[in-house]
Image (cartoon, rainbow, N blue to C red):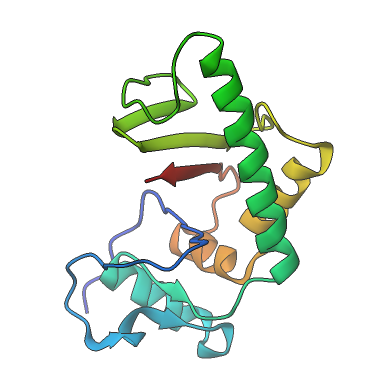
Length: 163
């Protein structure tokens, strides 16, 4: 058998609300095709991620983490809106192009929430700790590390997409 191609990067998405549509993928058993729980084993998850380019951890996130993430995001958006307002702009006006925020169109934007050790405006002291724990110690983080070949210098960022 041919050796599996090495992955150069991975993206993990934490979705707080239900998606109304899924990307166009061949899903022979529906969305369950992409489902994974730790009991399925790491090898299964790595194979799925390499084949499909994505996987869905069907193990629910801790409610406290979801609530903390949402509160952090709300504070970060409020701080960003306040900074933009001082410049006569709005987060959803479709004309943002900053390192931390860029527009995809009216009412559609991407916001960098964490890069390196910085979490940006609106953050509390515990926010960086929360983000680091979720990024590096969640069940799916082992899948990302294994898929990338357990790099010693793995870096990560956290962002949000508003639409």
